[in-house]
Image (cartoon, rainbow, N blue to C red; front, side, top):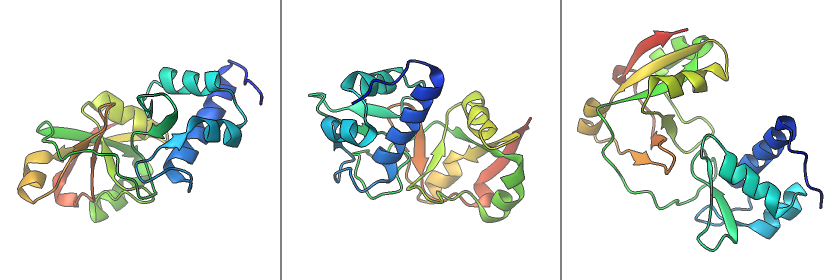
Amino acid sequence: MKLFSSDIGHLTYHSKRLAYLLRHSKLPNHKGWIKVDVVQNELGVLLLDIQKIVYEDTKGRFEFSEDKSSVRALYGHSIDVNLGLEPTIPPPVLYHGTAEKYIDSIMKEGLRPRKRNFVHLSETIDVAKQVGTRHGSPVVLSIDIEAMISAGYKFYKAQNGIWLTGDILPKFLKVVCYE
């Protein structure tokens, strides 16, 4: 196995590969865990590398099991996993960041998880802007949480503060910020 360089390019490359394994491959068990030695073999990296990715990830996307023998993603899965999240009442407003090129479609069809299990929401406009920037000129949408709860929606909070829910109809969306 090879220890990757500490430069940001290699760290980003292996972080993306780890995210793919944990979120989209057939390797995670029903609770999303993959044994660290399996991850090491799949990625060709050392435990130290995996630790660096997990502990230094600014988005808090990953976690180790209590005994540090396994690792999993906290959200973003396209595979069926049970992360043990309980329905939770969110703040009155949450935000979703997207790119300007998608806004017309979203305002007609709503927000959908697409290839993931949930729509991802944030508590701040700034975090939503960062998400939207990944795909182009960012647009931030506010979500009417009270109306959604009244309509029977459930919300789940990942450990890193990302909120998760199902499809969001256009009537619950409002554009609050264009860049």
